[in-house]
Image (cartoon, rainbow, N blue to C red; front, side, top):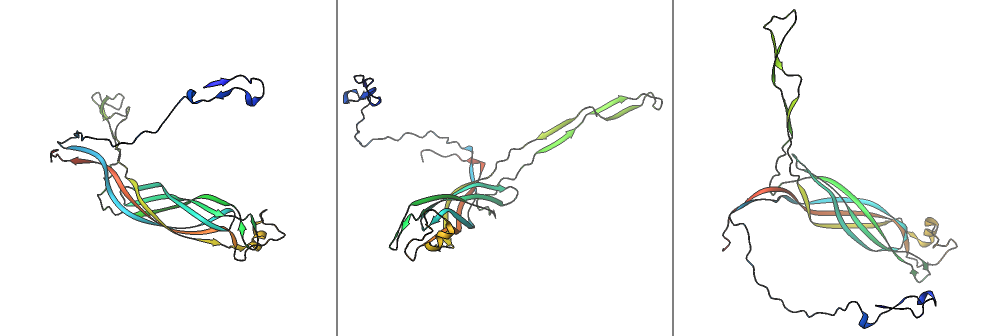
Length: 278
């Protein structure tokens, strides 16, 4: 790339104008031809004599149902809901070990597209498409039936104290010359502690299905809505609008969530030997 200094000082737009030409282009990329590529199998180098592997083992696979009822208030009056996109997210899925109780906590991220009024007459309404993203929380506990394999029992931490024998001479008018104090040594503290690091079961999400029913709360005619919502776009001196149109700000949402998940735990599994030629 070269620079044109001929107009130097003749205006800010003419200063250091780059001269882009085809011959000075710093890169040139053209399309390549797509052809079929050949491949040859390569022998797999694997352990054939058997091994012990630490891998996730399925403890249970099940479907859990959540029932959610919530109120969503939009930041402005809306005419209608155009679309709602949903994504389920889990933030906690913990098995309380030595029991079969699973604690689940999460939320549904909802992106709501809705239409608003900007101007209207007796024949129609014009406005903007807005969106609002909200998180709908849910949580529950559910008992798990281990239809795979039982989880490993928790090994507790242990601690024990021990002491050494001590022989000590006694002196004083009340003791004979051969008297001795035989006891444990109080001048020291000895302890053995054992700590076990247990494998915590964990969850994997398989699928989710959400059935929902959304209902507008207290939808008002536009002539009534102007006094309730107090929006600048709704003039107090009145306006015309189609007779069937309503505005609302609150939505009552009912959802039934079906969540399928796996409960797993890392375990040591013996894998038998095999003949790679078979």
